[in-house]
Amino acid sequence: MTKLTKLGLAAATAVGLSAPAIAETELTMYYPIAVGGALTEVVDGIVADFEEANPDIKVNAVYSGNYDDTRVRALSALASGEPAQLAVMFSIDAYDLIEQDLIVAFDDIEGVDQAWLGSFYPALMANGQIEGKTWGIPFQRSTIVAYYNKDMFRDAGLDPESPPSTWDEMISMGKALTKDGTYGLMIPSTGYPYWMFQALAIQNGKEVMSNDGLTTYFDDPAIVETLEFWKSLSQEHGIMPEGTVEWGTLRQAFLEGQTAMMWHSTGNLTAVKNNASFDFGVAELPANVRKGSPTGGGNFYVFKDTTPEEQAAALKLIEFMTSPEQAAAWSIGTGYMGVSPAAYETEALKAYTAEFPPALVARNQLENAVAEFSTFETARVREGLNNAIQAALTNTKSPADALAEAQAAAVRLLRDYQ
Image 1 (cartoon, rainbow, N blue to C red):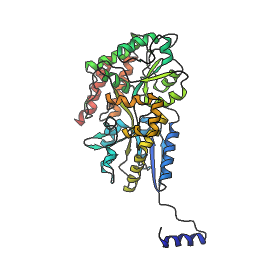
Image 2: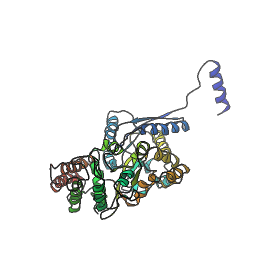
Image 3: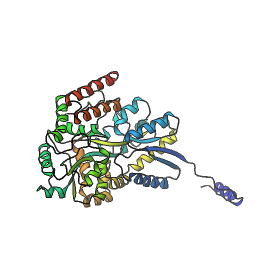
Image 4: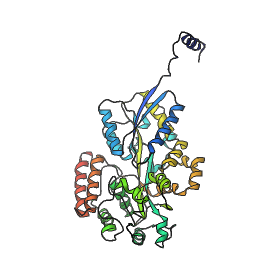
């Protein structure tokens, strides 16, 4: 502060005027929570820490429901002229956001650190890197993991340290665990059925889409076989309820003992840890042809209609929220994975994972993970696949017919992008 500035402040104080406020850049950030729980408190805590360290930046963090709700709310705000500078939205929204010219590539933001862009796990960057540029930065990221009740394993005569590693083992163990009103397995088929289906398809040796967002393979024989397998878990093997299994209530069903195993996001891990009244384990998903899970969750995006000052402030916030220390705190507080190798080298996360090894399962599964299902026209293509899955599981259509319809619709939607 210069001598003249000090004198000016003193003079202002002497006549009863308040000192001028620090010039402030204000940011509005929309973000989702897909697994329930009090994760908004974790976000609010990180934002408060950022504002304390950066008093010239004010952040309005707006919880906006699930991923689909957040996309709708953020884009509606932009369309109506309400200011919004950044958002956490589906990592798979990138194609549509680029097509609508709504976001700016991080490479094009002045002052971006290339070393920072290269610091994240490559598997988590796959959905956000398109045509040579980085459009999304990973934040609340996940893979699907298998939660299982070790007490029920012991009661069924199964080794609680050896969860199923293959589809055949999942069926045989599921049969041993299905009794007295408890199912051996539940895989959710509402909310994000395409995500679970992609995991099964990968395990069956087939991707559901190309890596350029232009082609889907829903009617491939291996994909049809995958949906037939999912259906067989209830209708042939009896280890899962018939019909649909609700995403939003599955965690509670697991905690209440309605199922011995469930597939769900690693974002549920801390909530399960804090609320389970039984001994539980977490495992990578089982293999058939191969092991595998899609990545999942949300990336940071910066909207294009922002000033250079706002872009700089948004970049500073994103760098803070994805820093190793904050990524470690986020992982511990939620169960989502630390988004960079450096997060797992922090003292906090090293100590936590040493005490609670299940916190490493989702990260370790990145070795076999692939990019989450994403195409141009993602929302509509994904809706067609979701509808096909549910039609097959509820016996409305055969897996082959349902997937053939979804494929035909996807071809129509993607034709203009070829």
